[in-house]
Length: 102
Image: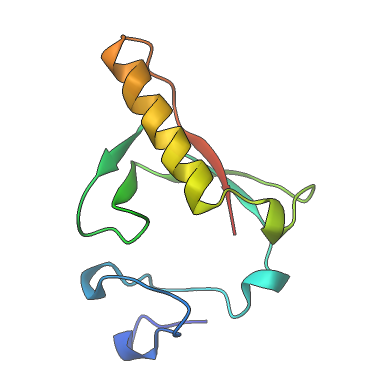
């Protein structure tokens, strides 16, 4: 769904800060492919609606046809990944975050 021209057309299920509305979104997450996303690191910001978690320099790594939307990374898993990544960075063992996203 193209929403770049009309930021007010964001569906109710997408909770997002107005300044961070994406240009495109899927019409139905249940019918959408799952993609692996890789980034440099997690960062924290009050602007982001995924519990304040953001991925710095995100990019699509590969499609994940082996996963359904139910198997994609959920918010609790994202929080755990971000917390583990923060601990690793403090100990000097930084890892690039990878998650599956619809």
